[in-house]
Amino acid sequence: MLELRRLLVLLRPHLVSLLLAACLAGVLSVCRGAIVLLVRDVLDALLSQAAVRNVLGLALLLVGLFVVQGGARFGRTWLTRKAALNAEATLRERLFAVLLDRAPADLRQEGLGDALSRLSHDASRVRTAVGAIVTIVQRPLTALAVGASAVVMAPRLALWAALGVPVVALVIGWAGRRTRRAATSHLTTLGALEVVGRDALGGLRTVQAYGAERAARQEYHEANQEQVRAALHTTLFQVSGPPLVELVAALAIGSVVVLGSMEVSSGHMTPSDLVAFLVALALLHEPLKGIAVAHGLWEEARGGLSRVWEALDRPAGVEDSADAKALVGPVTHIQLSGVSVDRGRGLVLRDLDLELRPSEIVVVQGESGAGKSTLLDVLASFVPITHGEVRWNGQPASSWTLASRRAAIALVDQDPWLGRGTLGEAIALGRPGASEAQIAQAAQDAGLPADRGLLLRLPQGLRARVGDGGGGVSSGERQRIALARALLRGADLLLLDEPTANLDAATEARFLSCLRRAAVGCSVVVVTHRAAPLAIADRCFELREGRLHALAPKLRIAGAEA
Image (cartoon, rainbow, N blue to C red; front, side):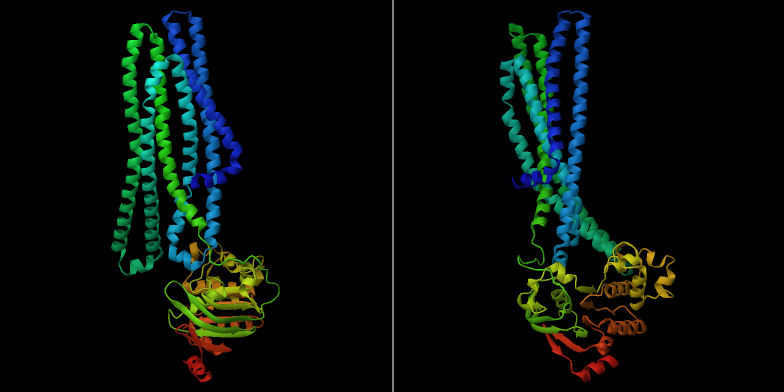
């Protein structure tokens, strides 16, 4: 069973704790069997009118067994919960690391809400799985100990009662299989529900502006009802197992009462043996029912963990080749030759050629959907190319490790991500360890001077928090913070996706002037639909039908003046 093997590998660091918990489970089981035999001895002592001192001793021994049993249960539960929580944390971090390595476009297509659901809901099934495994291990031990006690007291009755065990096993297996399928469906609907909620809340301004709250509520209601139906379906099979086990046990106990009374009447059993045997059956009923519950929980956990394993097994976006080396020194030359890219909807780039050189600004214009962002994704190694070749410093890009290539890149995205920290931390992401003076200079160069605008308005300046995902600043300010981050990085290749889209004309002019100065020693690629960047370009292209077409100087000047 793949899920069990992978779970055991995950639990390997906690093996000592789990073995100790298993030993405590054994102690717990032995106590149960001993209690049954002790009950018989107490009844014999009472029926034979033994001395009060003997009865008192048996009673104290019975209390002692319950104390040991309680301590064993506490220790077992604490050790297994601790191991499960640590394993869950490890699995969640491993899954998060894998998601961070996914190609951004692939993650968007698969669904960010679904990925978050796997992180939050599905990974937590480790606790359910560990609890179920421990219960499945301990309950049979308890059943074995109690059953052995029953056999000692009445072998023939024990054999009769054992006829119900195969029926119990069939019931448990049936309920478990149905639970796993239903649980997988339930977790899928939970992921879909998270997608709907995240989508609506992420676009709350638009939803409220267009009065679409009712439609959003309706969509969430429908998704929520779907997950309720799936949850009820799972619950149906979870709760059906124990009552069916109880029914089988009740039939067995009823048969034993009839047969046991006949054994007592014939003198083959004492009344105390029969009472103790019935106590054993009652105690045996609990572990059997517990096995049914635990098996259902295990199958439910398998459904969630299978979604986690599936995410862990998905290939990363772009991976290093086995002989890749770290890129050392400056990037002096990048060349794209005959590059084509298919992102699942036909070719976005077709036989594209482009050469980048230091201290040069290349501006690429194009309509929406022309492939401008895909061109930047190729340069940043976010997407694999379908055909052609990309060379860095004269060598195929795959000759250099992905980490070393990206270390030479600074990116200003169309919708910049700032994180949840301070404004200064958002800028310093591009250069960890940068001084506050360097961060402040980069902010000023990007149009965020300390004496006006955003930094003047915020009492804490660079130490002010930008809010969840940068929600505490405007879109234009968010883009200028991203520009500052890129300038602070001092990379050999600067990629800018619509960098001035949210800037006013005066701020745009200041930034472009700064960009022109910052281009010394590095290659700059700007993709934009605006005309102003044409004025600072060394070369300009229009991206049309997946190919680059050079713009004539006359068109560049006319575009810049416009």
